[in-house]
Every structure is written in structure tokens, then in C-alpha cells.
Image (cartoon, rainbow, N blue to C red):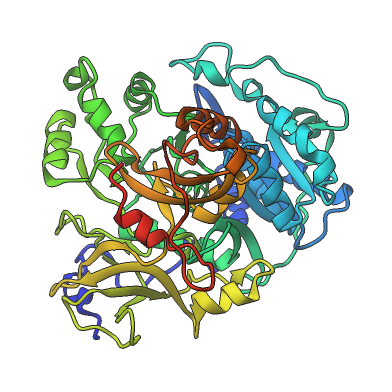
Length: 554
């Protein structure tokens, strides 16, 4: 299929992508800003202003600490915390030292954390001290984890804040045996740059956990070029300028939040207002005080703000563009109209289609020709094809099939999973397991998933991952989970349970849900449990989740 989307390429977006400071790792963009605009603001965290010089120096100090700890090129460093400046410092410090950053969702519980640390053989973990009890509980079971660095969100909070910090993240600073304090590291270690050389196209800088098409989470290996390419593409395609001010409230541990909150400010040299969590009043005050012009949100955030008392009287005229994603609530033309009217002109539309294996942002929405319900058109140097599910033949315009992608954003493969890599990455094409089609004018429409991954509150939930944890419950003999529609989350997890014979008739749905809530992240634990005497399976014993999903009415 010819690139039909080029007929709708925006006139104000160049057809060729060029990198603002050349093809180099993003941490060198950070160093450039520190050299040429040292006193300009890079991040604003609840009123605490961090300059490019401070951010660069702090990441250098952390890099020097890592080298002293014996970190070598390619070692894995886990980041386990909510949004905060320390996350960004650790991210770029680790990459400057040649290490691979492994984002870990702060919602993970002990079992999840243990699995992922061991899956990637992480050597060092940087964690918020509020989460250390989970880390401490599993250290005996994570033999490769040699060093734990702790930080407290309060270390970067000013005494006077223009808006409230989330109460559930306010904790007194704690000191634990056998750990390091990031604040001490940033006092003791030199700001000297390491100046290591990198092969931008080959060296892995990021390991993002994803399911691929099936199975428990695997680490998708992303290079410096993958991150640079997708960041530059997002900036240029969406018309982000040097005079813009970003607002980031999306989780930095999520690939989309990382692009918007970690990468784009550093690539473009524009200030970013960073928030730990979404709260309507805080978001509104931040926009007003710092004249935010660009924001990436999920549609439920916009809907909540539209219903917030006094919203239409707020001074939000600085907002000019709001990239949004449909999670639970779709980004509809009506929602966008209400948003534009209430904000005094801010354009709102679907941000993009993407996945972890391609460093996300594979499409963008032409601002001058928005098509609601679609994912927009492919970004620079990106080829997307639609293949017949059974034959693999390329489908014509208008016909549905599997979405496959080829671009400079495509990952190198899964960490230590050659079979899974071969299944997903074929001749440079990522076979997404997602279903979609192209319209006559080249817009991509997403229709569903071939794979059984569940999308809950914007997070990927892998059935096998939940099932493994549920099997630890003493009353469960067999279990299978599927996604069921949820008006708020998009999808919620439902578990089909075959109880142990001795427990049949005793175990209750509420008890399993309560147990799961204590063991799993909030977006992951099952909201529904249905008991069965047996589960549908193939002759080889593979459970047929498809049949369970088709028959589920939860």
C-alpha cells in the first residue's frame, strides 16, 4: 500500500525530520543546555525551580556515584518512585554512566517488583523511601540487587508552595540500614562529566517492561536513537516551540509519560511544570501561575476539570494545545469542543498511537485536519502496514488487519527472550498484535487487539502475570483472567477461578478481591471473580481465554 497518509501531511510540519542538536544521546542535549543557558529553568516542582545547570550537575554526580559502585556499561538500574525531579536526575545520570534505565511503576507490590528486578538482573535500585518496605521485603530474593538508593519527595519541595502537594505522598524522611541517600550523593560526589562515548543506534539506554504479544512482562530494549527519534518526532509533529511551557502529570515510568516529561523538555530546552499526581485544583493553579501552553492528558482528566466548580472562570488562556489519550473516556469531538470553549481556545485531540516496542508516538494528529475517532497519521520516517490476520498479506485501504510498524523507533528485541523477539520483530517490522485499518485519506483507526493484553487505566495488564500471582492464593486450584469493559478504566480484570476441592463452597469473591488488592497494583487486581468447576481449554491444556471473554457479562 502506498503511503496514503502523505496527502494529508500538514503544511506547517516539515516532511523530513532533523535533530535540533544532531544525532546524539538526549543527555548530551542536557549538557548543551547547561552550557548555553545554565540559569534558565528546566523543571518546576510545586514551586521549586531547577535550572539546566543544576539538573546537569546532579545527573553528573549520580553518574559518578554509579561508577564508584562498580556500574559497568549495560548494567540495569531500576527507578521506583512517583513523579519527582529525582526521577529525572537518576534517569539521565544512569544513562551518562552507560547503564540501562528500567522504569518501575510505584504501584507495584512485592511480588511484581521481585519478578521484574530478577527478570532484568538489576544491579541498583533508586526508590522513594515511602516504598522501601516493599523493596526491603524482597531483597533476600533479588540476588543481583547490590545497591539501593533512597530519596524523599520532600527533598525537592520548597517550604512555600503555590499549590498543594499530594497528602498521600508526604512522608517524613526515613533512614534505613544498607541504603544510600540520594541527597547525600548530590552533596558528596563531583559534578565532573564522564564523557563516555556511545553508539547511538546500537547501545541500549532503556528497558521498558511490556508483554509483546503474550506472556509475562518482558524488557523491551530501546536504544539512544529510539528515544531521540521519537522525542524529536513528537516535538516537530505537534509544533512544540522554544517558547512553550509543558505540564506533565502523567507517570514518568510509563513510556508516554517519559516522552512528555523526561525527554521532550530536555530535547527542546523548554521548561516543564512537573506534578506528582493529578489533582484538579493543582493542575489549574499550575497552568495559571506558569502560563502553561502544552499539556498531555488522558480524557478523564479533562472531563473531571470540566466538571470542577468554577472551571470556566479560571485564567487558562495560555493553553494552546492539549494532546490527549482515550482511556476509559474517548477523546470525542464534543469533549474537545467543550474543552476549547471553556479554556478560551485550547485545541484538544487524540495524541497518537504507539507501543513500548516502538518507543510510542508512531502517529500524530494533524492539528489543521483533526479526525476524531482516529489515531492520526504516521510520523516521520515511519511505515505502517495492515496485514491479513491469517494470510499475512497486506490489506488495501479500508480493510482491517494487524498493524505492523517499521521506523527508527523500533526496539532491538526483548531482554534475554530470543523466541519472543522473533515472534514480534520480523525483518525490522514490529508485529503489534493490534487490529486496525487505514481510511482513504490515510488516517489510522484502531479496532482492537489480537493479543490478550488488558488495557486498564492506561496501563498494560498481562493475563499470565495476574494469573501467576493469583495461583499463590491457597484456595485457588486454577485461574484465568480476561479484560471486561469498564466505563472509567477502559477495561478491568476479571478472574475465572477453579477453587481447590477442599475450599469449594467456602472461598468468596470478596475475599479473593481483597487478597489481590493487597498483592497487586491498583490497576491490575481483579474487580470481578467468577467461580467455575473447570476452564475451557484446548486438547493440549491451553486455557481458551477467548471463550471466557466472549461469555463474560461482568
